[in-house]
Structure formats: C-alpha cells, structure tokens
Length: 121
Length: 121
DNA sequence: TGGTCGAATGAGAATCATTCTAATCACAGG
DNA sequence: CCTGTGATTAGAATGATTCTCATTCGACCA
Ligand SMILES: [Zn+2]
Ligand SMILES: [Zn+2]
Ligand SMILES: [Zn+2]
Ligand SMILES: [Zn+2]
Image (cartoon, rainbow over all chains, first blue to last red; front, side, top):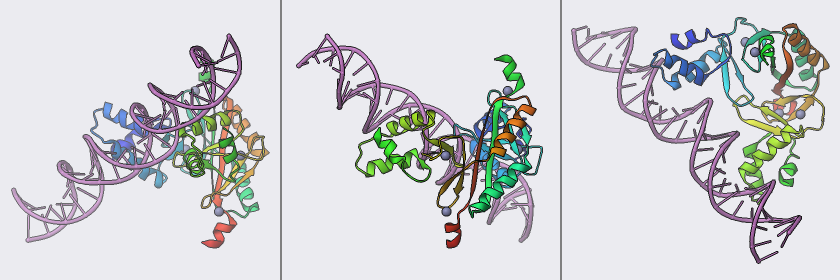
C-alpha cells in the first residue's frame, strides 16, 4: 500500500503498467493486480486524478490541489500543470441547465508542447 | 465503405464493435478491421468525431456541425447534443499561452442525465 | 505460544478492444 | 485471359485491464 502511495510522488501522469514496472525495478514484489486495485481505490476517494489518454490507456497522478481542477499536459514529455477556470465551470453548468440536463460533470484537459520540448524540436 | 458511412447515420456515439455487430446483423459481410480502418480514416479527415469513454473504449459519431464543437452526453441513454463555447476556446488559448505551451488542443465533454432519463428514475 | 478468521496480495489466466498478418478478392490494363 | 494493385477478410497477435484463487499476513483470542 505504502508502495503505490510512495510512487505517486511522481511529477506527471503514469500508467498502471509504468508504476508496476517501476516498483518491480525497485525490488518491490508487488503484483500488477494490486497496483490496479489501489489506484482504483485512491481514484475513488479522490486521492489521485485519473485521465484516459487518446490511445485509451488510463494514467494516474497525485495532484497538489485537492479541489476541482484541470490539466495542461505536454504532448511530448508529459510535464503536467494544474489549471483551473471558473468561467469554464460556470459555462458547463449553464449549458447543461439550458438543455435540462442534471447531475452534470465534465471532463476537460489541455494538451500542447511545453517550452522545453519546443526548444529541442 | 458506403457501409460505414451509412451506419454513421446513428444519432449518438457508437463504438467500433457496436457498428461492426450492427452491420453484421444487417447481413453485411464486413470485417472488423475494415470498420476500424474506415473509422480511423473518417476521423482523420474530420468527417466524424471521436471520443474516448471513461472505460477506455473509443466511440464515434457523425456530427451535424462541421466546425469545432463539444458534446453534452446523457450518461444513461447516450443521447448527444452538440454545444460550443467560444469563451472556453479563448480560455484554453490564454492558459496555454500563459505557460508558454504551443500547438495547443483540448478535449472537453459534458456528461449529465437528460430530462427523459430523469423522468424515469 | 498456537490457532483461527478474514482481508489483502500476487501469479497467472481470462477478457476485451484494437492492431497486425497473410490470404483473397475486385478489377483495370495489357 | 493474365497480372498487378489496392481494398477486404478471418483470424491471430497485442496490450491493457480484470478475474480467480490459493497463499500470506495480522489481529484477536484461548
Ligand atoms: Zn489533477
Ligand atoms: Zn514537454
Ligand atoms: Zn460532434
Ligand atoms: Zn438520457
């Protein structure tokens, strides 16, 4: 348990497989199933954020902010910044209400190339 | 090929598997690989929209609007509405620029329960 | 100290969407 | 007809995630 939590000290989003591999390479005899179990658990409690990449793989991250926020992710290196937009939240609520939808949630992520990666080419 | 296009006349997002199954049940001897190939092709040309669901499955839809837009999807029945938010687009650009990110894109979808589904319970 | 019970774990099998592969098929040109 | 090109197919291969189940680890108690 402390294992998965410890690993969550990574700066950017990691897949369950990456986390598992990293734990193994550190000598931890942890099973893949356990990694998935605990990630799912922490995701439920809101302890970590999850994000489904375009290729369908789910990645996880322990964020600094505990309140609702979104992410600006570098498409190349994965560097991740937490961002928030009150205006967006209001817009989402308004649009949903306008169409009579209730129990609204939304999913929003920004992707781009960070300054460092752009410098490289 | 007209096959996949024909099927795209569905109202809401469908997975490749669903589309394949539906074509087969209509007697079309279409292969799964062909469905994927053509969906990918149409997605590239912008002819259809794609969206990765929370469970990792990719779903496709032929939208009415050809310009950039987002979706308000019923979590229960899948009914989908196209929505747009100029403010959100501006916000995304601004946030990215503020952090020096370039080549920015974003992914935004709204989920909720539509009036019909709420009426049921 | 030993024994018991239940929750957590890990190895590997099972599942499921997606992609790859090799064999066919359709068909235009010669 | 015969052949080459490109699309199509069934089925195998891949890869992530989930399931199964025997085992381990503690907590608790006699
Ligand atoms: Zn976060
Ligand atoms: Zn970067
Ligand atoms: Zn659309
Ligand atoms: Zn609905």
